[in-house]
Length: 123
Image (cartoon, rainbow, N blue to C red; front, side, top):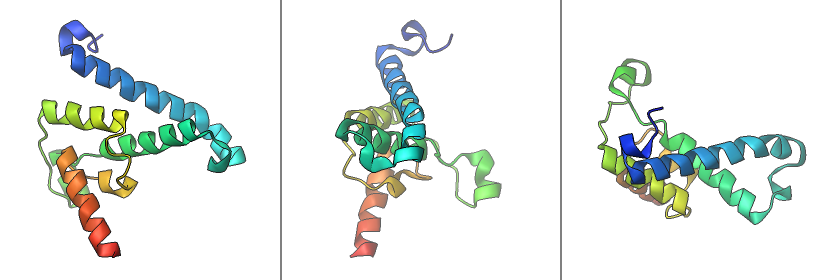
């Protein structure tokens, strides 16, 4: 098992486990959402769903090998920046940003910049 704190470090391990937990909770809520809709979820579950959807979008970081298919230039994101971004997503630091800001971006700073651009375009 590569996801071991002795291999990846305590912070990386902790953040990865938080991300897994949020995504697993979201998966377990999907049937409820499909049947009853988002309105029937508790505020905590709505927050979990919103964070999970942002995490899924953030996982779409543009890879160099996908440039041919996406037309988007690949980006290299430092491991520390990736951990910082996912930690912030898990902790709710970016709850105020729209989901679309996390799609096909490199680091978390790029997502924040994209959110600002989206807000400016909408105004």
